[in-house]
Length: 92
Image (cartoon, rainbow, N blue to C red):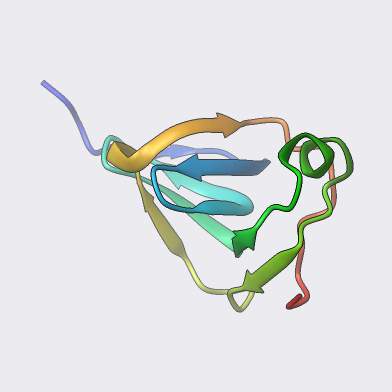
C-alpha cells in the first residue's frame, strides 16, 4: 500500500511532464507529487540538448520564490535530479 509520508529533499531539478517542463528546488516528495519552491515553468526550452548543457531556456515563467508548486507524479516522464545550473528566476 502506498503512503503519503513526505521525503524531505533539497536539490535542484529539471522535470519534464507529458505537457510541461519545470525547474525548481525540491521541498518534498510523496507518492502523489513533487513539491518545488523557487520553481519556474519552462514555456520553451529552445534546442533541448543545448538547454540541458547550458541551463539556458528560450522562455521562462517563474513562480514567486515562496510558492509551493506541486507537480503530479502521474504526469512526470523524466527528472534530472542533479540539475547543475542556476535555477532560472527571471521571466524570459
